[in-house]
Each structure stands twice: as structure tokens, then as C-alpha cells.
Image (tube, rainbow, N blue to C red; front, side, top):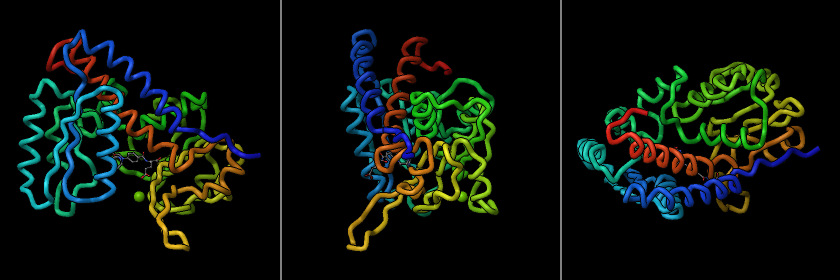
Length: 295
Ligand SMILES: Nc1nc2c(c(=O)[nH]1)N[C@@H](CN(C=O)c1ccc(C(=O)N[C@@H](CCC(=O)O)C(=O)O)cc1)CN2
Ligand SMILES: [Mg+2]
């Protein structure tokens, strides 16, 4: 039996089309489009590509971009001053700092400086605290994308065993809380977990978010489990060309799993779509209740 392929690219395209229609209905009422500011520091080529992808996605759905790029040699105060200005800018509904920052840059001060109601990456301690407490707030885009994909595909979570491998603040920790809120029994595994295979084999849902190519092999998966691959790893093929692979041995795991996300075309496109979703939510809330509101 071969697994059902969970097509994040197709779902992302559908959701973006719906959002584009919603944006068009809101603009006449509000008098401006939703606005997103993506801030990038340094010259990491992957970050540059992701930021371009975010700006293009904004354009597709009719949102305005207020991106800015800083040199890795710039004083960190430049980034902080820009965030404080964007916090006050009424055209801007969402602000994010593309991660990772270059070596020597501490991500904590800029993440703390973003006004929580414009924190469309959901990384401000206020929004992480809201998630922990089960209160409404902006939530991290990749975990939100995973949850939306699971819900859209009708994959039941309540009472299921979910194992998340990877404990990052961007994916593993917030996703564990979201699965818990959906009544799954959640295990958060990581690089120091002994006998990872023993843990993953118990799971009805396995989420890999580690950044290690092909870490999850077929013998580590319970037959009929749902496998979500958040890993994005660039590897070299024998002929020397670059290839994008996830954390899952896709070809062999898809023969065991009931459903699986591919890389590319699975979770990645959902990340950008959930960023647009969060920006639209922030815009709606700001304009429904007036500026300075709390989510
Ligand atoms: N501030 C943030 N930094 C980072 C985040 C984030 O959510 N906020 N996530 C990742 C990078 N990322 C968005 O920023 C991102 C990663 C992957 C994709 C994507 O669509 N991937 C495609 C493949 C693209 C390719 O060919 O390279 C796919 O999986 O199909 C979008 C966004 C780290 N930093
Ligand atoms: Mg780890």
C-alpha cells in the first residue's frame, strides 16, 4: 500500500486564492491593503529566497510589502529602530525578522521589540504564552500550516499518539502545544532522545522537524501512521547537483505510512500561506476594533 500524498502546495494555492478574494472585499472598507514587513539581515542565500517568496506571495494576494534588508555589519540598533517605527506604522499589520540571523546577532531583542499584535511569526513571548495557555493569539506559521493540512485532510488527532521530533521554538515546541490543544497525546523528542525508533514506532502521527536528511526510515514508522516532514535539507546528488530533501526517507516511508507530506511541496508552501493568513487576521482585528487592540 502506498501512502496518500498530502499536497501542501495545492492546499496553499487554494487558500491563497481565497485570501486574495477576501483582501479585495476588505480594501474598500479599510481604505488600504493589509501590509507585511519582512526584515532580513545578512546575505544567507536561503533566507534571501524565502523572503523573496514571501514578498511574491504578498503581491499575489494583494497585500503590501514593507521589507527591509540590513547588512550583517550594521549595528543591531538599526534593526531595533526599524521595528519600533514599523510598530507605529498604520499601514503595517505584520512584522517579522527572517531567521536565522547572522552569527553574532542575538534574535531575542528584535523578537521582543515587535508589537505582539503585529507579531505574525508568533515568536514574541506574549504570543508563545497565549499559545501555552490556550488563549487566542498569533501563532507560528509552520506549525499552523501543519495543523491546517492535517485538519483539511480530515486526519483525526483526538486521542492519537503524536510524536514531534525537534524542539525548536519555530516548529517543535509550538507544534507540540497545538497538537496537545487538539487532544493528541504528545511526545516531544529531540537529538538527545535515546532509541528514537522506539519512540516514533509508537506514534499515529510522526512530525519530523530536525534538519537531518533521511533520519526517519521505514522501520521507524508504525504501519498506517501519518508522517509529516518539516525538514528542508539541501544535499548533493552523485552527479554533483543540489537536491532538496526532508528528514524522512520518503520513498520507503511512503510504502508504510497511511499519509505523508513530500519535500518539496508539503509543509513549506503552507508556511508562507499561514504567514499571509496571520497578516490578514491581524489586519481584520486591527480594523474591526481600532488600532492598538489586543488579539
Ligand atoms: N522568521 C522566520 N524564519 C524562518 C521561518 C519562519 O517561519 N519564520 N521558516 C523557515 C524558512 N521559511 C520561511 O521563512 C520557509 C521555508 C520553506 C518554504 C518552502 O516553501 N519550501 C519549499 C521548497 C523551496 C525551495 O525549493 O527551496 C517546499 O518545501 O516546497 C517556505 C518558507 C526558516 N526561517
Ligand atoms: Mg534538536
